[in-house]
Image (cartoon, rainbow, N blue to C red):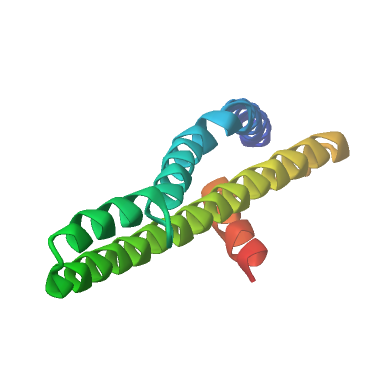
Length: 143
C-alpha cells in the first residue's frame, strides 16, 4: 500500500513539474521583454551620446561660443562617464539574457527528463528533488 502512495505522489509531482515547466517556457518572451526594452533605450541613448553625436556636438558648440576650455573638458568628462555607465548597463543586460537562457534551458531539460521518466515507468523510487535538479542544470549549462 505504501508503494501505491509513492507511485501516486511521484505521478502527481511529475504532473506538477510538467505544468510548472510549461508555464515557465510559455512566458519566455515575458522574461526577455524587460531586458529588451532597457537595451533598446540604452542603444538609443548610446547613439545620442556617441562621440561626435548630437549631445556632444551641442555641448561643444555651446561651450565653444563662450570660449571656455574648462567647460569643454567638463563636458567631455561627463560624456565619457555616461558612456562608461551605459556600456556597463549593456554588459549587465547581456548577462541577464544569458541567465534567462540558462534558466529556460534548464527548465526544458527538467521537463524532458520528467517526460522520459514517465515513459520508462515508475520504479517505486521517491520523486526527485526537481529544484536541486534545475539548479544543477543551470550550473552545468554555465560551465
